[in-house]
Image (cartoon, rainbow, N blue to C red; front, side, top):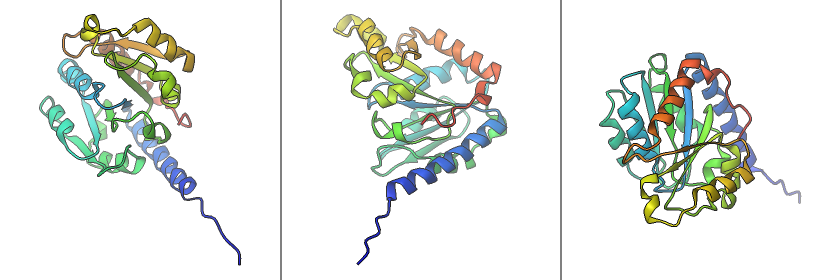
Length: 230
């Protein structure tokens, strides 16, 4: 008897990459700069988005796709700050978003009226690292309430990211978190990471972050893309 082994994961990943390439083409054609925000749970992705929308939503149109395991809580928080549609993707237990979900979310958005798109991934530093969503770049967040060695514990995510945001900097005086050590660990994994140091609560670092986004949207860096980096 002959046994045929079907590589299910390889087929699923291949299909995802094909869909991601299509998502990337749609976003590039529409001139939409797109970032996939990734982090462990509770690192402050939603708070960063809220603070960003408060500062930039009146300057240019921003769309948001949020991913969560069960609720639409994050989407509801963000929707209070923008008149535009916020797409909530509930994964029903899956630990990451995939390109199909993002593609379907884009169907409900007016890409011609969008300049900047944030994809808020499910809180997880393992699974999302393997799934290309068609984004321009990954932005990895980790907070001062986490260990400085997050980058070496989850190297793939930090290797694939282009930008890193250390969040909750307002709590630094109350913790033993060593910022220089955290940056050093991250640059062991990815020497090219650009860092932002922020607090959504008191606004620390938010102007630098928003100036970066202004420059990216203004320069049309969506055309650069990140095809094949995942």
